[in-house]
Length: 258
Length: 264
Image: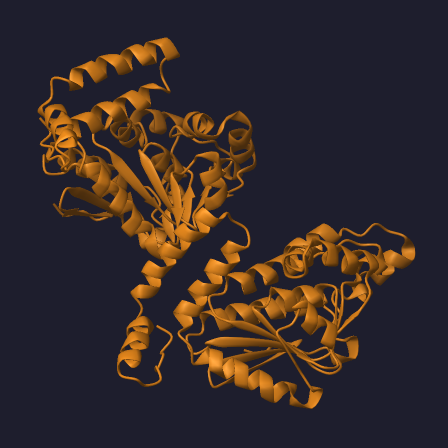
């Protein structure tokens, strides 16, 4: 399918989505949100795709929402169109793993998008922030919730109330990104991580992702119960049989997603 | 591009940037800070520039902050806010030089103090005239080391020596600077330009991308643990391995000739 604001391709088991509004530093607009949702949907249905990578450019993953487009909106219009909520809902419930390849500006809606992905590989040049406060609003795509869960109250408050950006190394120390690599390597590294994930059992990966995400929503006892049920369930999969057999036979397992 | 307070000159891949307020011992006023930062940015962008040399016009390399800028405040007893001066003027210059993926040489022609020393230390290599003197002079004005001098002096000299020069502010002459490892080479004043040219032109003919990556590796190595440094080396070697100059470097080895690096 042809898209205007993103580029979509497949590399083996990977589904790649590249945000592509270079003139606007990959700012999210309605068109891009529609296209992202549609691309995510088609990768979800594609059984060959076992892991996704979402990237922007070296200069900007995404500098946030397109303010020109947002500026004339009234409160009622925002509420009735749901603004970007189709995207946040889609990414939030997405069952396949998604690796974010971050570089340059990861701001506002760009950071909110990144924080709803599963593994974040960042280039050294990455700058993350929620600068909405500078234009008289606040994060509206999950930023106040996800950033607080990622870095704790005090760092989140500082970033959200002052709009100050954070560099890649600090983000890694605080656990806001998974790893930091040189700028020339961020995309290849993200693909490498994605390929590694894609080589695992898709069933186990899906369940594990769901369980980790539930950690943010459930109490500890409930979460552990939930985890246990998913764990038991995997014993019904062919991939579990193959995985354990391969381990004992000292060979690489071949997972089929069954 | 023309600058008011620095001279720029490009020759054989080497961008010379000369601090040019000789009557003020090349002290940094606002303008010279802006000019130097702009000249550095321009050199960073220019693909024809494969090495930079920073030097000073006249007797001094640079005497650091131009105290005359705030003379009125000092004479009227008004408070001076130096933090912002450092953040806006010196830190971007130091960061610009350290992050620049091209070799930057300081050709230290004479008196060097305060932020002037910071500038020299931010460079990758230092060639000094035998007339050069180095002054970690902050303490003599009741101030603390800035423009990166606390960072580099502790790393170059070790903690005890760094304490000594920072607390006493005694000048260091060129031969002592050489012994301490504060400069890489010392030459008689009349040969400084010639020798700097030799070294810088040799660097300008080098594999610029690999030199830039080497700088990144060493910049990082001074602040991280060994395991991280090893991992970072592996990443950078991946990148260097994909450059044209690496292929040329290996080919020339097989063919038993000197490599012809293009900086790509």
